[in-house]
Image (tube, rainbow over all chains, first blue to last red):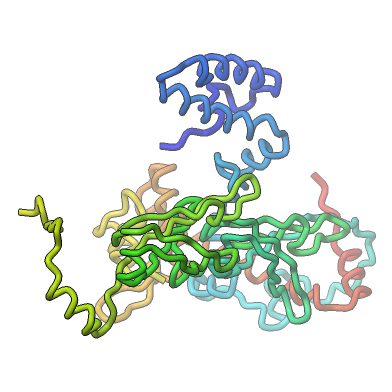
Length: 305
Length: 108
């Protein structure tokens, strides 16, 4: 069960910034990993406390968390689909009570409220202000764009575009909030926000594992036995990699820094080798193997029942 | 759009007999398709609303029926009001200004 940052620090949701700072200092001292060698639970606690303080010490982030715009980790939270969101749209007519009025024409409306024929009254109305509504968009990016970050355009309306910066390492379903890019405000009120739900398309070769990327690389028997230099695709373009002599299927090689291109430090790409003999088999190889009597025979199924 | 069985899995504390009764009472109007019910997004949101109303306020079927009836009327009015607002918003500024002037001020 996830804890709120307030629960992690053990403070009330209305605690002052001063109070939060004091509690944080106390807990940070108590659980500092260097003061608790050999106690992994203290380190976990220290990380949780730091993350909670990180969120609550920033007044902007704290306010956004309190409004439910972001979750404990600071990630944007997609807005829940409330019934009213549908009920007021056209699909809500399904639940329209029978025999209710319909604004087919103005006469119906006037009749419903008894205001026909009153004429203009010419009273001075007061201007009002209202914040514009948030608008939700969805955007699909490909795997490489999600890994390296990208600039994308979302179509708001014909001839109207919104530039969106996709941060490297974005997760499928994550929501980006662009302040002031939603519906226009009324009567001089501020505009709403644009919420962009980003979907990441799967890739035929790359698979994501946290900040690392996994890929399976087929190699020939000769490359596996003798070693070789081969070209491997990565999200930042192809690179050359050395396969050590005597590599087996399942051997894992690491390409440092070729994973998710996070600004604070990119992840790695793990290449898992898969030895492939070839579609028809090589007659010369077969002939060689028939004659070949290994000096150090081994049983690959040793230990299997 | 999800099927009856999937919907049961989605919400904790929603049982088959209860959901069936809601549909029979016409509180939720899923689409009938090949021996099963298909729930559109609005129906799913409505099921969640009913679940929450039941959980937060302990009310019986009769009261729930009344609450849903009133809610449907409110949303119907809001839908009609929205159409009126959309129609007004499509008018030239001088007509909008005239309507704004003609709206009597609300005093608290």
